[in-house]
Image 1: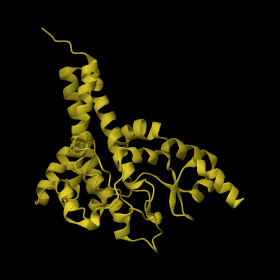
Image 2: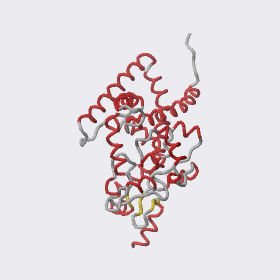
Image 3: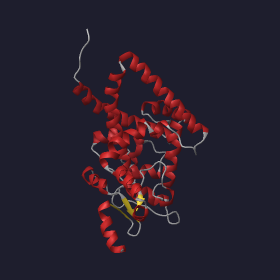
Image 4: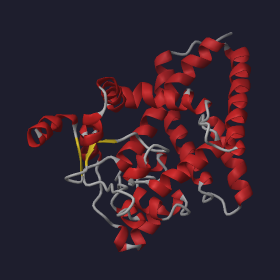
Length: 291
């Protein structure tokens, strides 16, 4: 006898499962840094397996994320492992079609829904031409593993049912994950600088936020809210970040609260002249000042 379960209950459980998906990604993230285990072999093996569960090829993401850590806050080295961010001048000089595309991409209704889901479900299935064979191989292996898992689950439970159960989990999980990454580097007072003046120390302390979350959300997000510490010491595992924060006064910077973080959605461009993030609404003022 089959038991019918309300799809609303499935969606409610999907929210919880999305939380575990985010926590799994943080463990995957630590493995990429070689910090979750003391053994490199265990980090690589475990990271590759979890990468399949979080729809992310291990070696490919490990490489792009290392580039992100080496270039965060550097205006001359944007484009890999970060949320695309233009300067006001770049936006002003771009053709209208590219400006429209940028506006759509930065719109929260797109970035934290369709954009975030597409990043993990579609974009991670492809590889940049510039990467090496190891990174390319990780994409292929991950894609094959996901295809096999999907086929097995589809045959056992039905492809429609698998999609109806998995898509809400993936959509919610990736939306929250991209939001976390967004507020870690897109906030008032954030640090950006050209290569000549760029500082790794300032990029960590000023270019990465301390996102203060309630204990439960902090657990699901694996303490990654202590992002300023993580950028200064990426080999510190997530389970030691809070301890590091408490024991080192120099890391106890002003936190970014949930309510304050909501204001970050209106920040879209870097005003290089005034060294601050601004919204599209500031462009009228920029026109007046610059003719």
